[in-house]
Image 1 (tube, one colour):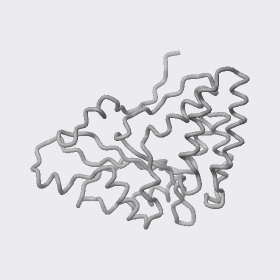
Image 2 (image 1 turned 180 degrees about the vertical axis):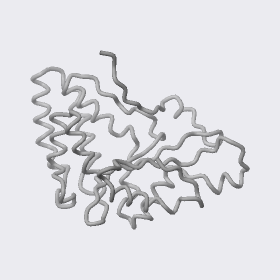
Image 3 (image 1 turned 90 degrees about the vertical axis):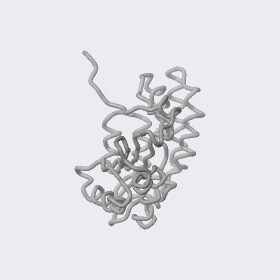
Image 4 (image 1 turned 135 degrees about the vertical axis):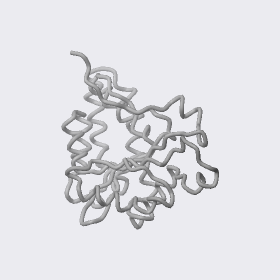
Length: 226
């Protein structure tokens, strides 16, 4: 989780991401943290050093020569429909990252032949999410779950262009396994092949957003009492 400040290390984002991708067996993600000004700092210095989430996206696009463009990023809450679908299919509660859309953004990229392949290059994420939204309310029993899963799995290949995806991973199979099983092993298999890139900034006195405060959180996994 590198902290970012303009004129300090804002020219190093591309290099950080490339280092992470080259060490994917150890590093599973990079989450950039724009600097938050919580102490005394004058107005001129604050304006020179502040970085926003859109700034991060633009810098990443520039420093990866367009391989990871701004439109590859989505708010963290974008994945909520997938969580709700898996929860309905398994009839079990699954945590939902329902943070305010201004809290943070992220994407996944594959790294092959020293080039980045964002998931959005070959996966129509928005159409996939819309399908989840349509089908999830229909799931209300075992028979319904079976029929809904069959309906979804038939549609998945339409959203994936394998020719534009990584050669080292069968992305269609990964998505289908995730929908069918939704367990830790299938999720881990995806993370072993893809690098997560994200950004989140902490609010300070100069950019505080009350609506975001009402719906913001940092999620932690913890073991429940047995």
